[in-house]
Figure 1 (spheres, helix red, strand yellow):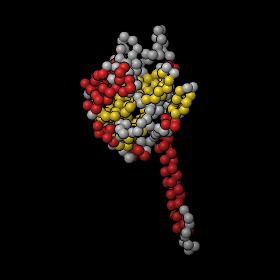
Figure 2 (figure 1 turned 180 degrees about the vertical axis):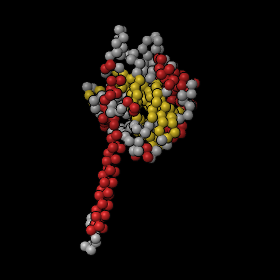
Figure 3 (figure 1 turned 45 degrees about the vertical axis):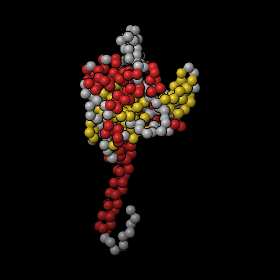
Length: 313
């Protein structure tokens, strides 16, 4: 603070003014420190929560959530992260403590004939959240639903915070494995949606987000009543709508088949009517895709890019 006092002011007055100056500087330093902590540690008083906005980001991280991947996705400053293809062994290095993370996987693909689990290949779904939010796995999942191969993986959570609670379904649909697991990708989404509706999990406020492994271009691979177009219509009839709205053409997944490259959308967010009305859906710029060994990778890290959804409450 610039000193504009006249020479006839008393020493006591000068001391008081100096104390005010120190207090003001301390206040500004505290505010700057708080801003840094808010940005990097996700305190619940951060900007979006003050504005009654919640950001959910989903990203299929491609065979493990490790190395540069947690840092790359942290740039989107998600309040809740849904990470398909996350490994249980990645949780410790995710940057989230045990109170702010959850993982589900049934270990089936990573288990050999002797019953040993190869942790490096043990892929599941990771969910992470900031302070000020509580994300709790629904008891129905642990008790019964997780034991049914038809629901691999559509994991239900209850989400609470300084907003009206809602149900989050973290999605990574799996392909069929054997005679005991006959449903493939979108067929599992249909089975879960039908059953979850019957037991009340889709009542009220709900968000389904993740990698559905599903698109209308593959409709002919399935019976008409259980393909992607039918799923979108089924959810619409429940007043659960696609949040991408009128977003211009984009892709979330690149893959190669018979030495030919394809790009498609198969990561989605669906939300109940009132939530979908406020949703702002986005994906990163297309220039973040890098060609590596003949295949495109988002930032060189995954064959999927993130999807970002902001909800206003």
